[in-house]
Image (cartoon, rainbow, N blue to C red; front, side):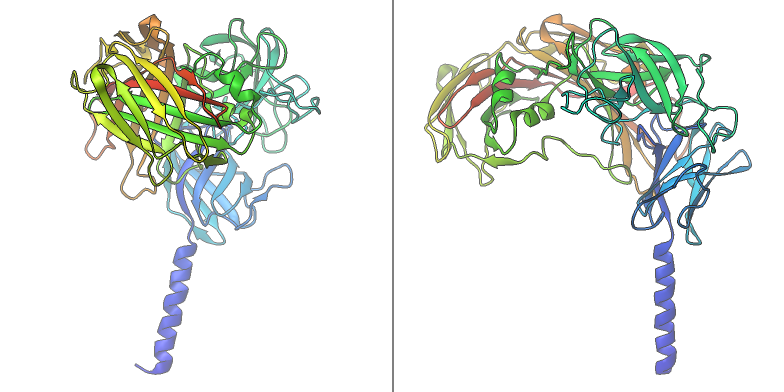
Length: 558
């Protein structure tokens, strides 16, 4: 082969590779508000809703948005189509970028499912399977990820928020917590189709034929309007009255249409005024008051926990380079007696993050080790590890080995940052889940009752579960699922996981066809005792707590 021919082959190979890498790849498609990914119960694209596709090479490197109405079917080289029931539906493009595009699902899109494909600069993606439905509501959230504070506004379109800003008044300003009896507006997409040219102008109108229900803190709210907004294509408004008897900074809010459940979000509600009351389940008295009063708090956490295999002790001493309010918002829990649902995935969808992990912490030195003494002379040391925290295995869970009921004392001699201290905690009688469902079928539409005995009556119980769908081998997403967390008083000894929680989890097919994607589901129960406060030189406060985690139980959700 001549040198010139060799160069030509190399150039041709390089060009072919460049073209191949430029081909758009769709890895996930979701409701534009909820971000619930394909394969989950809340994933169908509703007629007339805003959708989003995630992937690679879908558009230009920098996001480009449509300049006005009507949205074009080609924007900066990006176009997309849905194929369903033998029809090709061109999608109006709201925005485009390399990693994701937003679009309108036209109201005439066939229901039942189909495929979507994206074209960018002449290169077209492979078809990506999607479900479609008449209605499937998604609630917009302030982080644009489908969880956390919902976008809820007052009548002047100012935002319901945990804190009231000095510039409160008018669109997009923070005006504090809501009160029972107020009429508010929840912003969403996916209520269902409209009649008329939806691409050129908003089409408001009360969709009274929709069996929509709105739940706030487990209480059904009175809805006074549900339909398109007067401002925006594909965007819905739900005007509702805040029900009595609910309050907190993280009150769950979600919508229901028949057995279809929206994403779960939160809303701050105060009995009166504009300041909600924060809560941290299992926290000792005065914990939040001390935390929120500190400008840059230094604090310590000492924890004992028992699961089915081992007893463990750990501790961390930290300084937050920020306000105590930041930490409060990161660790706030739900009001007792309520539940929260979150979706999860391994890749290919919207980014996720733990708010606690993003806070600016500095590790503090409380000495080379901490000493633990328990009943019957059970003494242990908790050494400080190379990463600055303290961890040790105390023993197994057999009787007489270590964390049996009784008083345990922790002593620190002090270090570079933290002085000496002494604190104690009482390990309660064992917590027992008395009616685990085993591998039995659980009918999601009926809910599931969890009963227990023992534990600390002043503590709390977390009831958690998840269900995941394993996707096809050629997908960028290895799994996607939903998980829930319900919080109850330990003294209640019982809790009903509502149907509206379990219906968000993907079910296990009764007779799965060959090649069907497997579904795995578990439920577990964790008991958390009421924590105890302690003090030490160099600390604004410290907390010692105890948790008992029972073995997770596999279930077959139907």
